[in-house]
Length: 508
Image 1: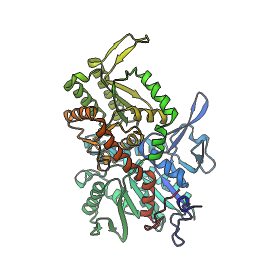
Image 2: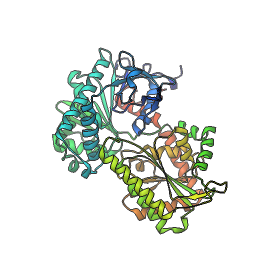
Image 3: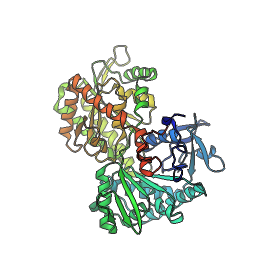
Image 4: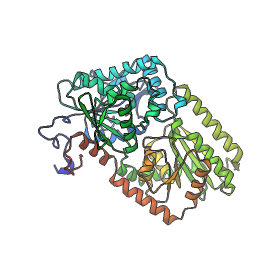
């Protein structure tokens, strides 16, 4: 076996058994099982976390522990609550955790999504705190801890915990197994002390995260905010380099590792015959004329993604530049999320109403139903999950992609778009409030709160000369090719001690 294809075990130093088995832990699972017309099917789940981590696990193997959220998930697991995944070509184990109704409602929907999520994204008016949420969150984390400890048994492993749903898990694991290696990757932004102080349980969360051996963040600014919180609320001792914190005799190392996508996978998919056919289908579906320029947004229906402000900016664009009516269409792919939370249901309805209002004011059509059919709507709104080939087709078709998050840890849509732009003709517009803006410096950086500024950026992207578009996109693609999900996971594992820092071999 060549060094570039060495296994995790072969690259493991003899005196370091911490990563002889990889255990990934997250709330969201990468695959769900459900019954459709009495037929058992599986689906990939949506979201940046699972789309980024699934390729890592397929490459490295190991066990992924996650909540079994699919309605038929129990029908496919063995006696250890494990199913081999991906279902069509298994390469790793998915061990499912079963949450009861109170843990789902209070811990997941309540504390995680109505307290921590808006807090971390600085949408403080949306924080809906209940003490009962905290108790359910504790119970949910305790249930994950029991499964992780059972999975560990007496075998040496490395536990890699992901995101805000499981902030108490490092402390629970370390309380039972003090020497167990544990790392945490915090995918969302981390708020500064002025915002974090509104959380009644701030000390409990910080102490648990500082029980881990390694804490990872998307950007240096989020890492800095965490350090400031640890200093202010715990009085923790921070080393002069700002990357190690000592608290109660334990040292936690801190690193910033911006997550990425599989550049090669997206690039190759975008050039496939299936995507070429999908592009033809989509042009017919939307009745696009060849001369119409296309803008694209791809998001979960979440208020942090800035969808409403984005629609207002598109409205401002057609108001400021009326000559683009009939010549530019914005496609918004909206993936439903957290439909059990009232704030999300209300937001979805407001988005629908806004799209309809803009289309009523600017849209036009003629000869519908005939071969000469012509219909133009300023916004084509597509709600629901779509397949990977269809998504790649949209990415490749789009003359511009608009990422207007009001606050985002990274935003992988920006990177997927760049990886899919094999023709190098598209322009990326990315919010200055998204982590991706710090890396993709050839994008047009926008302020999502400046509607007229976003409208101007849309015009700039449409009118940008082809040579400049290709120069910008080529530079971003070259960056992503070397800073892809493989490079990210290798660096994270080096940080954790599985791969020596002087070892340049990539884990395959």
